[in-house]
Amino acid sequence: MGRTFTEKIDAETLAKKIFDACMKAGEEDAFFDKEDLEQYPTFVETIYNNSYELSIDGCTKKVIYDLSKVDYDTENFECADGEGYVGYDCGFQTLSNGLTALFCTAGGYWEYPICFIIYWSGKELRGYIPTKGNRWNRSQQCAFGNDHESDKKEFLKFLSEEDKEEAKIWEEEEGEPYPMDGPPPPNTHEIIEDIEARIKYTGG
Image (cartoon, rainbow, N blue to C red):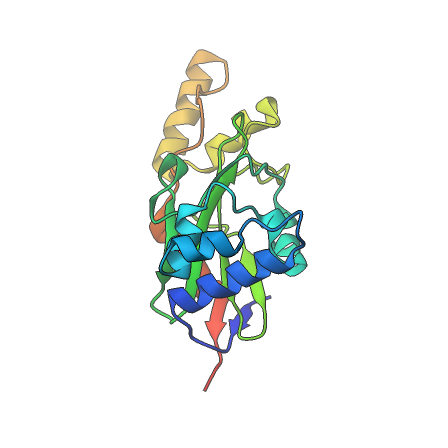
């Protein structure tokens, strides 16, 4: 089932909404305070410069629920502008359909990180984990690194058809599983395509 958003906002507006949500998460769970806000001139810079403190556990219950479809750890979390862990894009981006989202990556030290976004639906903050271009163990619905035997089989699913055929021939000749230390690098183009196809603008 597709999703919609009804309001196009800029990065600064989304950053403020995320900031406010973290503040309302509770005094013990909030990751930002007035000193953080006074230190940086914009909410975007506040988010970027405190990205090591920002975790989905400090956001809204809806965002936490949205991002619970895949099991992963938030030990290593990145959302500052630029290239995140293993090549995922990070930071605030406005896509061609007008959706502004904060691109994040997260994973434990033993895990291959995943990519997810936080965005404004026009009513509330939402989270979304793109399927295409993203890398996690589909059969176990968890980040790679939590089930090594299953991971080895899952890695092959991300290969191109040509590479799959090469792996099949190798396994037939060698009589053992095709050696892969991890999945192919994430595909940023496919991730954005997935988001734009999944989340449609229905505003005026």
